[in-house]
Image 1 (cartoon, rainbow, N blue to C red):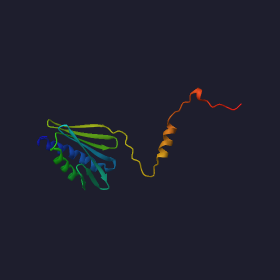
Image 2: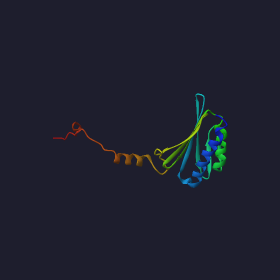
Image 3: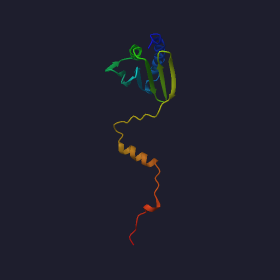
Image 4: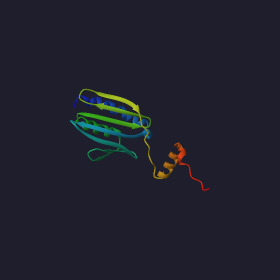
Length: 146
C-alpha cells in the first residue's frame, strides 16, 4: 500500500478512537483482515479491563487506543489491502484501504451472544424449545390398550 494512504487511515482511526472514548461500554471488538497478494491474515483486538489486546503475529497489550491506532497504521501500510471492522453494539464500522483509496462503511451489527459462565446450555435449550412450534403427525398417535 502507498504511504500516501497513511494519513487517511490515521484520520479514520482517529474517528474510531473518539467513538471508543465516548462509549467504551458499547465496544465489543475489532476484527482485522490484512491481504498481501493472495494471502489473507486475520487479527483481533479485544478489550480486557482498561487495556486492549491485539492478537496478530503475536499478542500485544495497549493501554490506550492512540498507541493501538499508531501500531495499526504502521502494520497496515505493509500490506496490499486492509479491512478494519470496529464492532460495537448496534453498528459495525468498516474501514477498507488499498492502493487507490480508503473507504468507510457502516452496517448493522449481527447479533453476538456473550455467554456468561452462569448461563448453562440447558437453559438455552429450554428457551429455544419454548419458542419453537412443534407439529405432530396424525399417524404417530399412541396406541391405547383395549
